[in-house]
Amino acid sequence: MVALSSAEAKFRGMVKGICELIWLKSSLIEIGFAPSSKIGLFCDNKAAIDIAHNPVQHDRTKHVEVDRNFIKQNLEKKIIRFPLVRPEDQLADILTKAISDKVFYISLDKLHMKDIYAST
Image 1 (cartoon, one colour):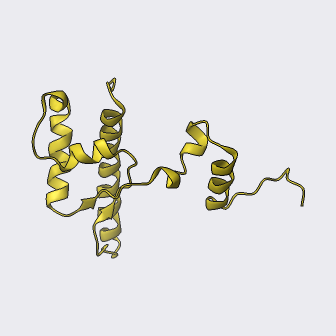
Image 2 (cartoon, rainbow, N blue to C red):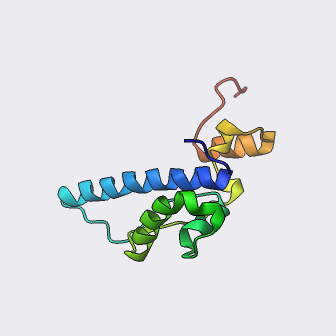
């Protein structure tokens, strides 16, 4: 499958993430731990979150209709929620993008990683 936009790629990734979260939730219930709140699937793409929340089908998103309906059902059942991750809190960027030294070291600190080559 080829995504034609970053929003579509993130959206399809959200569907896969939801499937994993639903499986994890059912596994937790099976062993006697029932989560008391909605499951948060963090996403850093506002367009993908907007597609998930918008009940109107657009011509540009017809090909993701099945995925959108799956997400819509889980939102309506209050199983999931999509908090937006601010760009400065997106720790995955340290591995995927060219970032400044400052952002790099802030990310390292948030991940509790240390530079083993730094002078002590």
